[in-house]
Each structure stands twice: as C-alpha cells, then as structure tokens.
Image (cartoon, rainbow, N blue to C red; front, side, top):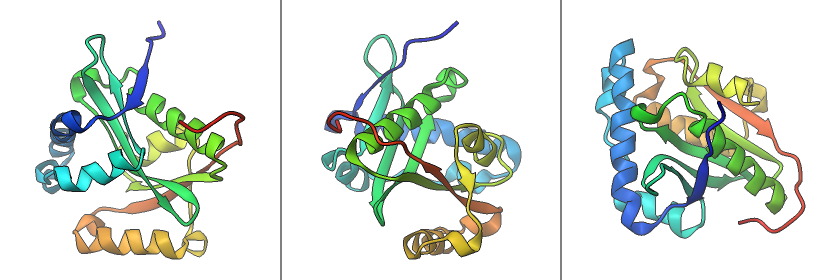
Length: 180
C-alpha cells in the first residue's frame, strides 16, 4: 500500500523538531556498535537555520502536519550536497527518506543542477546500500572534487573516519518548471 508523502519547506519554529528527529534516528547506530554516532549532537539551531533561509531544508510531515523526517542540502561546486537526511524511527520504512531525496532531485532538476552528492557510511544498511538503491553511485578517489574532499576532511576531523565512508553521486535530469 502506497502512503501519501507530504514534503514542504521547513519552518523556523520546527528546527527543534528536526533536532529531535536527528537524535531519535541516531539511536539506531548504538545497535550496530557505533555509540559515538548515536551520541553525537545534531546541528544547532544557528547551524540549521541557514539551510532553511536558503530554501534548502525540507520536512516530510505526518497527518497532523508535524515533521517526522527532514533533509538539508547545500550547494557544493554546482551540485546539491545532501548534508543530512533523517527519519524518525517511529516512521521508518515508509518511503519518507526516499521521498525527500526525490523531492530534492526534482528541485535540482528544475534549477538546472546536474547532480546530488552525499557522504555516508559504507557498511551501515540504511546508508550507502540504501542510497545505491535510491540511484546514487559510489565515487572513486579520482572522481572527488575539491569540495567533496574538503567535506571528507571535515568529517575525518570530526572522527567519522573511524568507520568506512564513501562519497556518492546521483545525476539529475532537467525538469521543466520553476524550482520551489
């Protein structure tokens, strides 16, 4: 049974809900031996708000209009880089993450952005294997741009390289109509 997915821009008054979603989603990492990721605090409101102001923060909402998943992105060398996509575990496995990624791809296509990129853990089932099913492909080192290398360096400095990570890319088709 297909479920209707409502995606809309995130609002300022919802940024704390995004933090709560991130904390809840992060707890799943504890179950697979990555407690440092589970305990990592989400972005602060001051860090989240620029994504919202730039029009690069979206939420998937439940029937009451409450965000239960979110995606934030940033422009990196002409592409849109998925900085974070998180789904509250109580709403997982319903296509919400994929719906947010599809929304971003459509947004990018209307804006003439050629690709989506992201970085992720290679051995976490809901990370690299999931993104591959969503149309992303792994980039080898020779394909990494300066911007992606800089992102990976920041991640390594934050301790994320304790587990294998990869950069991924999904080419976007151009869509007609205004970006929204």
